[in-house]
Length: 385
Image (tube, rainbow, N blue to C red; front, side, top):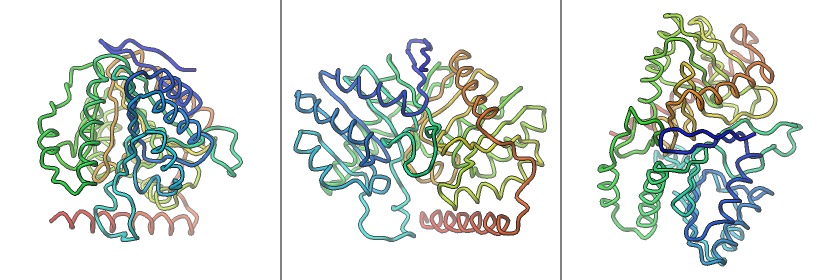
């Protein structure tokens, strides 16, 4: 059940899973009178994708200006017939770095558009981590949907979301026309830094000015934690600074609760995270594996007063390569609601990890996966120089 909060001048609605997110999004698209702008990493050719596609097409046919930006890697399986159908209906569709062959060690290939944002009529925005894909994975035998979150926003914060989307759309369009993007970079540099005292703030990560904005917000909140840190991350492979911050928090008596993926969806990420179990357990971190379904959440609550959720994982791709967008909220009612939701999953839909993997195969896979990811990241980072 969605929950509504007045946070400063902004009205926020916390949405859990696609069962709450997609009806709200499609209803706002259906009611749009002027503009609809949607960004997503995955746009799947399934039942949910069809519903959203039809809503976008019908809006365009009402003379609403509709823009759709999809990632070329995450949405690589979207049939060209679907894209042409959208364009024929009047929807402007752009690809962010569409795949052209397979070059795994090219750094640009890993710089994905991982954001999940929407703005309707400049008055309503969505910020979260939910892709346009069926909520319950097909052929997996699950009754429960993917665990994930989004926030419906109304108020001044919508302007920040709209401007972030407009800048990226302009850059992708210019790049597709082989024009210089120096103007885009200038616009991004002029974006004000997030107000640390604001009740609700949009956090971005890109490869121009906002390289560390999301990570810095996490570190600031974790370093100030006094009682509890609750993390829910499908892909948890943070760098040394983040791991040290969590270790210091646990040592000063802060309860650190980590909810991670308990089902093998992407093997390298799954087993690489397990490689860290021993160290984190020794540091006093509680680890719980979500078992009800696949987990796609990317959220954190600190001391029940500060919360963030959105598209950014705590892994190298999200923190160093991809374009991400999170919402940070300093409000006890909102943060408490998100905490309660995550803790319900911890207590009723998860298994607590008591010791690191001891089976030889699991140990081998965890070390191999962690080593491969570290090697890959090292090679990609060196390509910057």
